[in-house]
Image (tube, rainbow, N blue to C red; front, top):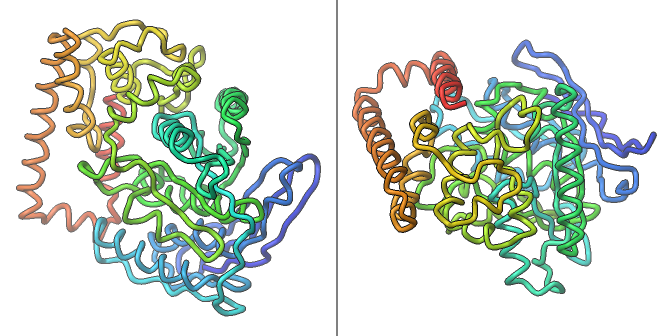
Length: 417
């Protein structure tokens, strides 16, 4: 893969950095890859080789590119970190993938770090990002370098590809306005961004399972004219880690001399995070965990997907569901819980809700969830036992690129939607 013609453009109310990306070892379409923000934030954008390297290297690794050659100089810290991240991914998804050489046309040297230091965090409106922001506001003095000063919301990440249908773009605008109000109330600034990294590989399972931590880090590198540190909220807690594109073993590897990266919140379970956010009225009225795509036409959270039901059930156990404006329901029905399908991490996410529901007097819901968790654990044990033989899974990983596993994950998501 070659990444060249890295440039910065400011016009028509927008600022962007872009590069031409060409594949060398596989028959995939060349792309212009870009990071874009508002013209008023033009000084924040830096035509950074690190941004394009971090954003493109995982797709290059998946599709068998022997190298990624980048125009300009590249930070050696990022080069070595990428080596570590790809080693982790190879361990998770099969050792048949060959290493990717990182080449820099102008050599390897660390870029300067912005002074004074400034920290940003991803702010999607989901539970993990709201928890990260809340704990930072509560515990870090506002004049400390680690205090979050910017919240980054990205079109092309949570809201699919940049050319998504009009309803999805409309919803992104609504969320951006809501998060702008939250940012103002918190004394931070919202930085809306758009990128098209998923044009390199539009497989959503791949993005979630392997790429999205690198993509978020790439957005941070693109903004190093404004920030020197990026906080990425964790998706899973340390007690229930599973392979995921944003992970405690991956995200810090995408740092450079110009950008420190912190994977935040992994010491807390999802229910523990929810308790913190539920006690914060400004966040509770904006909580948007729903991952239904396309989004529901008439509501922020669909109320029916696994993630919505999990969040609503947790809020119910905390006695806060009725006060959550983004959920129309004031209760969770046993019938709704019986429809839940398995998702990766299911047993860890749901098991902690059982004692909380019992304490809240909802044994009817607790019993359904407890049985669902037992089913998930039996499935996990069966899978691990069969992995001992492992012939099908290894064949899929090595020779089919994980395509069978990808289809199975899509079927499970369709069943839970």
